[in-house]
Length: 182
Image (cartoon, rainbow, N blue to C red; front, side, top):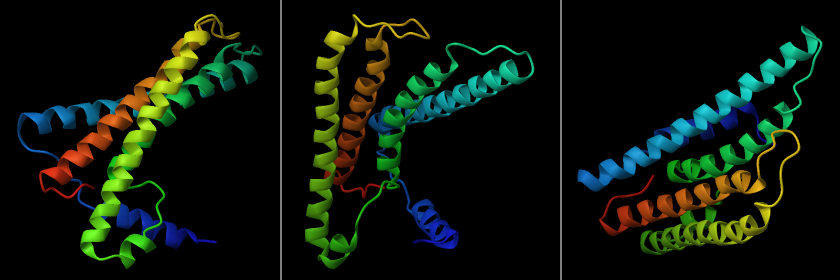
């Protein structure tokens, strides 16, 4: 079991890794899209906290419960996770076992890194394709608390999957152009 100081050391190691970005107009587009998703994650988290506090105030101070708050938080959490996973992947903060990568030589480690990025790309594609199929049925179902159709909830998985594909392509493009991805 890891102690908090070991977790702090891991966090510091991730923070020290330089994040590379492409230069020029393409780099500006990539950076802007990454920033947009970071802002979306912050906004979703803030909305979840606000709704939770509002629910507590309503329940304990006003004596009435919000019928939709728990459902909103659940659905916002789904969107938040599928937006945040590519951010963690781009920053190198995802869980990884680098004992194999450290044991390999530089060329083999780079090859493994390419395979990892391609696997992330395939995961994003699988999420998009499978969720799109699910959405073809989910548009007929309505959520009980909020009253929206479920395809709107699952659309967050599609957007997150597309962003995961975008992030994997960004990293692969950085490798192709000679920049080391974060």
